[in-house]
Length: 401
Image (cartoon, rainbow, N blue to C red; front, side, top):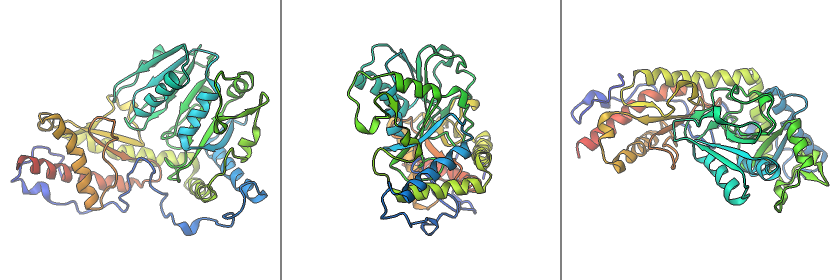
């Protein structure tokens, strides 16, 4: 089907449903699709009902840590630990524990980055904060970042579909720390570990895991800061990574701060084994790149849709966000423009073609398609003609009054 937005209520060809359907309709940006072939029967349940502090429980936690380190090719002197409250908890833990000794540059170009800005300004009340913001679709001026200061940023804006293109903008001789929320980037984009001091993520994104737990990765520089800096504010228990001025290193050996769900841990092990089976990090990256390539090919032919990212090199290959650029749609009142993607999503859900692809509530009106590694590239390819069909259908509905 041609990507033609110029349809009318009498244009019957526009309403011929595509022949091929995605094998899975799950394109949610979080929690994300389970790995191909997933079944609860694949999970090892021997640890359920056992203490997470038992020898067996610790072994399962350590397995998650060891497999994650290996797939990510983490430097030997970097630490990886499981922490409470998903990626949000990991980011907050980093900011509450590490910020204060230096001024901070906060980068934000979508909703989650903006939340970290709010927390630093209004909760931590730091005196020396520079906020560098950009509208959806754009990045702040990365060249203006001062790496004598601490820097907090998201690698990939989950709600904007805009990512930093690489790590070349980050100074190798920085004096401050770089704190990176990488939850929708890790396992899907190449991260330059030598440029990153703290990295956080959750299993529920690219690995298609379940929620509740986060991961925090620390460089030696971050550990040094932890052991030399005493925050000026009271520290909630779930944020504490030091005791008596020393790192609580058990966190990075599977001794969690709070009680974890061992079923979630088993699910994470299952996802990590799948990642190893498809070729590790390179296999994961290949799948996300294929998903992005299918969308790019479709967008190049579309006259009603475009990527929300203004530059191809900053377009996400996980949270792939598209906006409607049909002049007819842009001529509608703002409330009707906002209703278009919502209606498209409703139609595709009713057809069981695509679930949960309406754009994020704080983002500009549009669609958001998850392209992480657990999504089959063939499913992304099969979805795209259905977007044309759904848009044509909604356009005709509105034109018909």
